[in-house]
Amino acid sequence: DIVMTQSPDSLAVSLGERATINCKSSRSILYSSNNKNYLAWYQQKPGQPPKLLIYWASTRESGVPDRFSGSGSGTDFTLTISSLQAEDVAVYYCQQYYSTLSITFGQGTRLEIK
Amino acid sequence: EVQLVESGGGLVQPGGSLRLSCAASGFTFSSYWMSWVRQAPGKGLEWVANIKEDGSEKFYVDSVKGRFTISRDNAKNSLYLQMNSLRAEDTAVYYCARGSSGVGYWGQGTLVTVSS
Image (cartoon, rainbow over all chains, first blue to last red; front, side, top):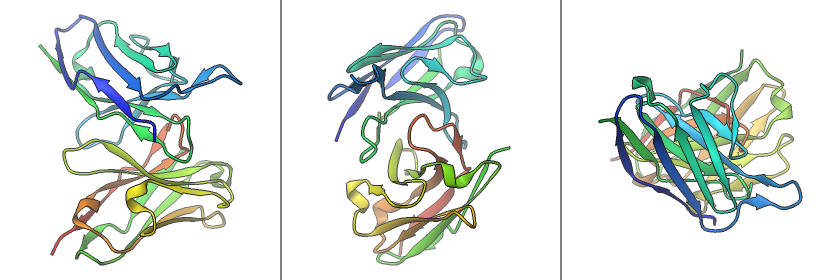
């Protein structure tokens, strides 16, 4: 199985500042045939299901504010929130879907306001 | 509007069985892979199983292989998860999700509690 490891486990950032969450896969999730990275990012608030933010590592889901961006390739990926808003307090997960047989999530990163 | 509504959760004793259902609407159900994802209390997300559009392929996380069965009825726009030999560690909120990759639609979840 592909193991997804996020860092840090928790993060406190001041309002208006940049927040950066990292995700590392145990092996490459870049498909050479289509040059796509099979990685998604989700935001989850208490009592709610996850919300898709980013797919294909860097494609923003419709309706997601442009302060959210995804980057990276191969095994190392980053979710960046350019200017933290109060409503961004949540737990963030990365997910690899390179292998349909075994989809895995990172352990989650809790984002709080400093 | 896409809607996924789970049902069937509840309290069950260790070793018992439960069948979860997910009623889908607002999209062509038979055109999508479907998944179950669970979340233990206070823990992270764990993919449980997924099933191809026509039901011909099914995949499971190792911890549920041989105990859980995912199925679908495209005529009824419904997804199912038959859970047998339940263990305490299966206690979680179970979410129905459309697709497996970049999941944009989720149900609200149904809580399964395995306890004596």
